[in-house]
Length: 344
Image 1 (spheres, rainbow, N blue to C red):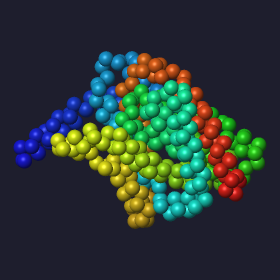
Image 2 (tube, one colour):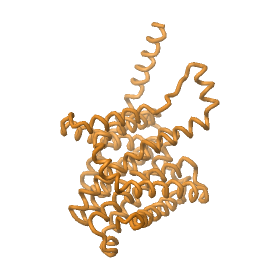
Image 3 (cartoon, rainbow, N blue to C red):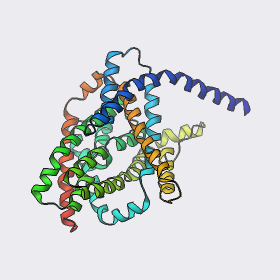
Image 4 (tube, rainbow, N blue to C red):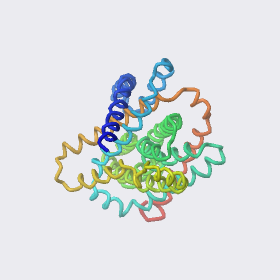
């Protein structure tokens, strides 16, 4: 038993050692992405991270180590845990009482639309799931959480993030003037932006363009919407277990056991619960949330580094068309659901 334990420890140490060169490559894409994201917040560091990762890979494809994929997966999982510090249960309960029907409705529209339209367009199951989750919940964070459960490839993650970014940028420009045209008040616009725009930075930018009151409320709606990652990932994980039950049973009999719930979701729930107690200093919670945002950028830089441009070219324009259709469906359904529930 002791020999087996020592062997495993040596194996893990060796794996970590071989991963070290990947961090230098990831830093080469992630550090400029942070700087560019600060200079152009409407674009955001996550999108720059993917783009720069792809560029570095294109310039030095033969030298980028395969271990960047491991960095991407690990950073994404830890990021999801740390982001839980920005969500308080009291906020969720307060916002959820009014906004939950709209959130669930728009998520259903995004997922069902992705499944049906994506199949008609001939898009792979993984890619349409990523685009549906990113459109229905919270862009890159949702894509990050879902990708690890459905075993999505780096190319699929990169394409999904890029697709979501395009329509985030469009929403940032279109939503405020359309809201004024429809004569929405601050609360209605906050709920619309919080449920129909994917990336948090884009929600904040669009809502504050409309007005300060809308900006504050939209952030709470957006953070509450982020929690829908948990039931979605659990549902997808259950489907994966069911689909591969026989092979997993054989693996378990051989001593290879998979957790019933992904470890990062368990810790995400723990962090949310602790953040809601009021015991942890605000500065610590803000640092944790900021750490999660940083790791998302690091992970997406690693995703870009692990993908060849040829893989993205093979995907074509159909995923982009799917993202556009889903964004329009979610935007319209959010307003329709607000009207139906008396919130508009």
